[in-house]
Image 1: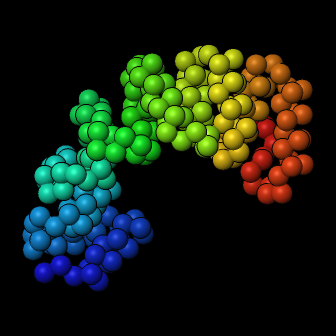
Image 2: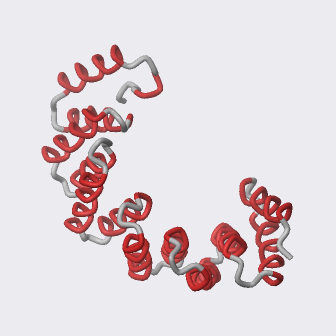
Image 3: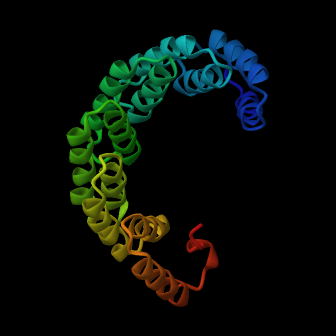
Length: 212
């Protein structure tokens, strides 16, 4: 039978980097509860953490079959595929997650990263712009666009995207990235002026750090 204390213990093992203990316990629970979604998820996490990505792929495929409408299951499966070196399958799982929940941010960010590093820059930018439409009041989509444009060696366009992210004020790192991009573009004076203004306007020192 499924034991809540056993679940908590396995989670604690994972949190404290005792992967093998978590794996043994999760396997034991899965034998007793072969189709339980919570146990399958835990087993998959333990398999990934203990460097058994092939086993994790099998486990998360079982989880997807057990919970076919679960976006988290598809996200976990994508992560296992990535650990196993199968980027194409990871992309398929992420797209399935997004077909279930088109504004699933974690899957969008993962897919954009996957596309960008596979040379599919335009697809990655399309995801960033989708996020912008879905979340117009936050800077996440603009920040992602700036990062992608930097990867594409388009500094001026990246500056514009970082500026929009910074203006929305929801992504503290946008200001630092904007200032760094300005410095890279040779606009040191503007970067320093912006930083000084942000420091003055922002009571929390953690949000703005001096550029090296």
